[in-house]
Amino acid sequence: MIRLPFLTLLGLAVVACRTADTSRAAPSISPSSTGSVQISEQTQTNAAQAPAAKLMPTAVLSPQPIAITPASLPKPYASSSASKSPNVIPIPPTPTLKVPTGFVVTIFAEGLDRPRWLALTPTGDVLVTETRQNRIQLLRDANKDGVAEVKKTFASSQNSLNIPFGMSFSNDAFFLGNTAAVLRFPYTKGQEQLQGTGTKITDLPGGGYNQHWTRNVVVSPDRTKLYVSIGSQSNADEEPLPRASVQVMNLDGSDRQTFASGLRNPVGLAFHPTTRDLYATVNERDGLGDDLVPDYFTRLQTGQFYGWPYAYMTPDRLDPNHVQNGRSSRPDLAAQTRTPDVLFQAHSAALGLQFYNGQTFPAKYRNGAFVAFRGSWNRDRGTGYKIVFVPFSAEGRPQGYYEDFLTGFLVNPSGPDTWGRPVGLLALPDGSLLLTEEANGRIYRIQYKG
Image (cartoon, rainbow, N blue to C red; front, top):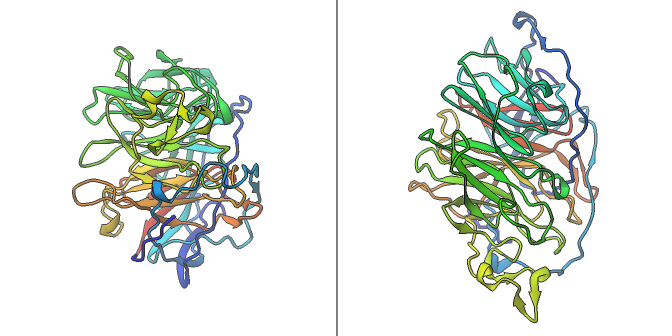
């Protein structure tokens, strides 16, 4: 890895103080469980009774560019393959998050059951999937104080939710990525609860290794196509499509095609705000050592192949599980392997992806990408458990490196011990950024105060 030289619950807030911290501790990612179905009563708190956000000082994060190149990668098995699932600890009495100078973090919502993905309704409400409960909650900050005082059940198992994840809107429709299907529901602007069980517009393969159950769905900017991410069933076995791919289809599910493949576990999907290119975060394979194989962030284009399971990063970096007599078992596919735009520390578990096109963050962040790292389990020293930022050029292309944006959840990389597992990201109309933290059931709100 090359480092370039330049560069508590409701109402709890975090503000950066002036004690510099440039450490880059590594985190860890463990398998998640689907859990059982439970439906709780919708709740609502009177806005007049909701507490205002409170501030607490934290250390200032001084981000430094992190560039990982294919040439810097070790050979397979240069280190042993660790199995160290994180020890999730309760939120400390004085939790400390680290953010760049001028940023403030508050608790937008708490008491959620392993919150995962986020979506914004056409009226500005926030939707969050509680996958273990087969439920989607609707959250509303009615008095605009940065705290969601309204919480209602938007959808549940009664609406055919089955391990729900990705959500997207298009005009009069709401799309949901269940683990084994994409559902389309009729939607009217301002609607606070789904009606009925929706229409299944396409079947998907469900389940998989380490619960590669996430099915993200995004509608194209011109509102004519739906893109769906599907992870592999295994770590590094040969599998038929549509596994390890992004599929594209019409909004009624017709004319489904493979858009990009060789993507072991694509999770985050988002269109760049100016170029309209589709980008993805991808979780790569385990078992080859601490620093293999890097997760990544990259632009996807029609027909591209990213190597899994035969190669990684470049055509000549062959997966040893698919080599016979020094040759790839599928040299035709290995030769098509694309190099991703930005490589992340191996095993970081890059999930949430949000382009920032707001006006309140400093100019360097505009049209760049934020990515949430859930953390490692297949690394001796934990890595991840943070948000990173991927800068873009004025021409709308990644600059080839990333930098830390929010850290502090990981308190002991050797454990690893952590009080947070970041998953989903969402930019709000007011320019702030939301983060779901799965382990302790919170949603954080990040804003810039200067």
